[in-house]
Length: 131
Image (cartoon, rainbow, N blue to C red):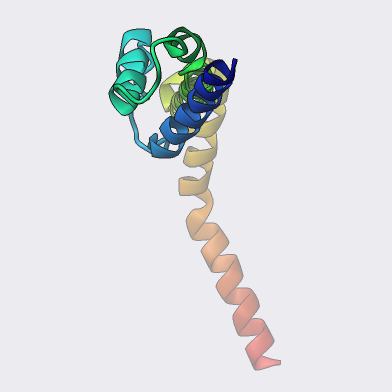
């Protein structure tokens, strides 16, 4: 029975090592192909386990790492979706026609009223200075 428990413990340790080695801060998704995960686990262990316990190791190794990779990739995807929505939502092409007209009218009013606003401000400042 002991080799089976050793294999299960080795599988958990392998998952922990794979998680610690994973670089979750890249701008690309982590490799989540089951064949790649299996290959990583087998390369790390090679012939260190007895043949009796190899089935237990294969059954347990990579499960936690696969869950971790899936969660990281999901979070990256959510981040990319949010950034894309933010970039697109502020685009002037996405403005409603009414909002676009209001913005255009406000810009026209500003250009028309700018000289009179400047004159009023200067006269107010001059009145304050001469009093």
